[in-house]
Amino acid sequence: MKLIVLGAPGSGKGTQAKFITQKHQIPQISTGDLLRDAVKRETVLGIKAKEFMNTGNLVPDAIVLDLLKERLMKDDSSKGFILDGYPRNIAQANELVKITDIDLVININVDYGLLVQRITGRRTCKECGAIFHIEFNPPLKEGSCDKCSGELFQRSDDTEETVKKRLNTYENQTKPLIDYYSSQNLLHTLTSEGTIEEMRQKVENLLEKTFQ
Ligand code: ADP
Ligand code: AMP
Image (cartoon, rainbow, N blue to C red; front, side):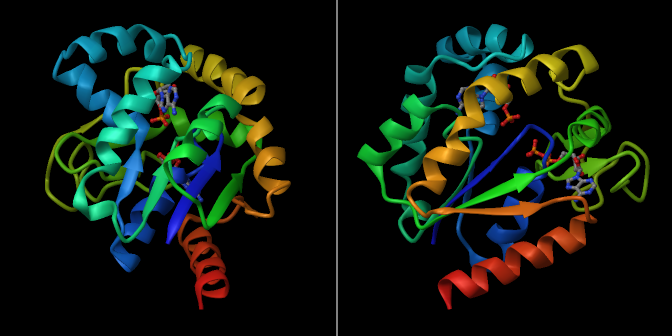
């Protein structure tokens, strides 16, 4: 099962990817997570990437491609994977073709207004990466992860100002991938106005239908 989850920032890619990972035992490969890890560890690559991320721009293709290739070489992705946040532009999609085939692209479509609300209310666990929302998916205890009791934090690029720039970057650079994958008959669009659980069911139905 080689999947891509496509969608604007805040559309619920990470949330749904984690459900797929649990149910189908394939890893979620999030280039955003890989980059944030490099930033945290202050690697040469992380130091370069930080400025792009905090201003809502895409990190240069070559940097992200190196990270992705390295991650795909790990054994756990041999049976399949969910790419979350890659590709982000046509050039990246053209690079991806050289590395692997893809079975299905799940495009999550969400209203612009909802996206801002979702991103600014997102809280992430420092320890295990679980994703919460202060209103739509609050933790049982404020500031603490339900799964591992880790501390919840707000991503530095989840501020209203940066979010606008990120949504703009999505419109200009990532959205063209909808036509790109649609023309290859790989794209399936799901509208995400429902709850997280409703969305999980829609994704699961789609996977059952596609991989039965
Ligand atoms: P992405 O990975 O696409 O940026 P996330 O999965 O991190 O998006 O979700 C963004 C925020 O929206 C999170 O705080 C998450 O809890 C919340 N969220 C995700 N899906 C839904 C949904 N269907 N309804 C309401 N909130 C959602
Ligand atoms: P995400 O976690 O997917 O919301 O990504 C956070 C930030 O990481 C983005 O705003 C970009 O700056 C950077 N990023 C993540 N994935 C990519 C990618 N495939 N190409 C370029 N930049 C990326």
